[in-house]
Length: 84
Image 1 (tube, rainbow, N blue to C red):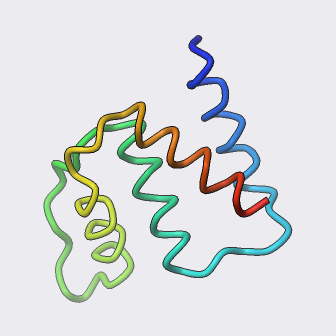
Image 2: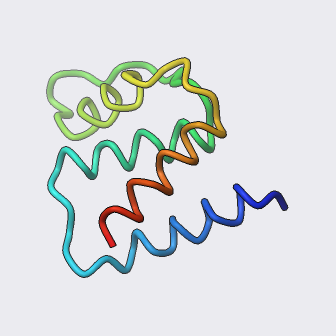
């Protein structure tokens, strides 16, 4: 396991134990970075208007399309560190 992957997995664990729940925009950023870091570019179909949460998540993830996996993981780590 690479050092980056180990730090990323630790950040994922730490994100679940934050003292305070981040605002919705930060939560969407965390979601998008996690998905980009673990799955790559968004290839899912865009949810319909009735699924507002799913659509917000899709938009956030699609908004960072083209970001490579390692960069997304590092940005996730940095964001979780800044919230701790």
